[in-house]
Length: 358
Ligand SMILES: [Zn+2]
Ligand SMILES: [Zn+2]
Image 1 (cartoon, rainbow, N blue to C red):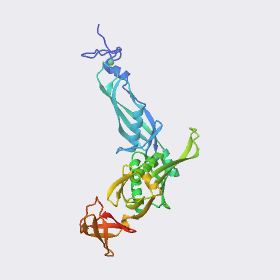
Image 2: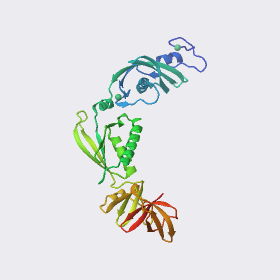
Image 3: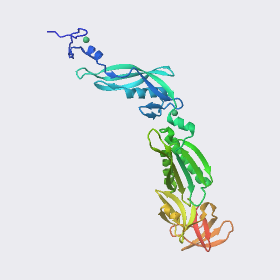
Image 4: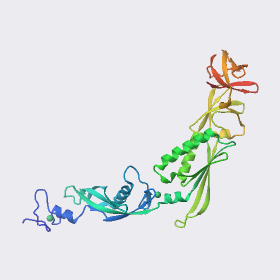
C-alpha cells in the first residue's frame, strides 16, 4: 500500500517518512517552530530610553538604536520554541517613532524525525513612551542617602578636597555606565568638608568605602525613617553616612609618646610612617591616630631646607640654608647621607631631625 500525505497527497521519498499522516512540509506548516505574539507593547522612557522588561527597568547599552534594543529584548522574552533549536531577534523596520518591526529567526525542528530548518516571523512592537522611575527621581531631586565627609579635629585641606572630588567623580562615572541612578543629586562644600546626596544607597556606600581604603577614614551609618511605602508596607528610611578622615594627613609630622613620626603613606588599611630619629619604618592602624596622645607638630611642606656639610661617625653637620647656621645632628641609622646632600629638617626644642632627603 502506498502511503501519502493527508493534506497535499505527496508520496514521501528518500529518508522522508510521514508523521501523523503528514509530509514534512505539511507537518511544519501545522506545527510552527516559533511561538511568538503578533505584536507586543514596550514601555520606554522618553528621556533616557530605559525600557521595562517584566518588572524591571533596563538601561540601553552598546551602539544599537535604543528603540530597537528595547524592542528586541522585550520580544526575546516573549518568544519560545516548540521542539528544539535556537533563535535570534533582529531589527527589521522602523515604521514610525511609535511602531517598529523585528524579525525572529529560528534554526531548529519541531519533530525529532525532521532535520533542522530555518523559520522566521515578524513581530510588531508598539512603543509606549513614559518616564522611568529614575528620571522621575532626577526631576524631583529625590535622594535616599547622604554622605558627609569631615576630618577628625581639623578641616579638610584644599588638596585633600581635590583628591576626594576626583575619586568621587571616577566612581560615579564608572557606575553610571551600568546604573543610571548612580548620579549625585546634590554636591556641596560645607564648613570643614563635603556633603553629597545620592538617589542610591549602594553608590553612597561604595564611595565611602573607597575613601576609607584611600585615607583610613572611619565610617558610621545612621538611618532615619521618612515614611512608609504604601504598596509594600515597608518603612522608607534615609541613610546618612558620616565619613571621618583621620585627624592627621599624609606628610604631617606627629609626636606619638616620645617618637617623632612623618606620615608617609596609607596602604592596605595601615599608615606607614618614618620614625625620624632612626628613619626606620613603622605601620599602624588609623585608630592609633585618634588617641589623645598624638600631636601634630608640622607638615613636611613647611619645613626649612638644609645642606649636609660633613658626616662624621654618628653625627653630621647641617647648615640651615636660610640662616647659614650650622647644627650638629645625630645621623639616623637607616638613612645614608653624605656631604652635599640637601634635606628638609625640623627643629624641636633642642633636637634636630632630618625629615626628607631632597
Ligand atoms: Zn503534505
Ligand atoms: Zn528614564
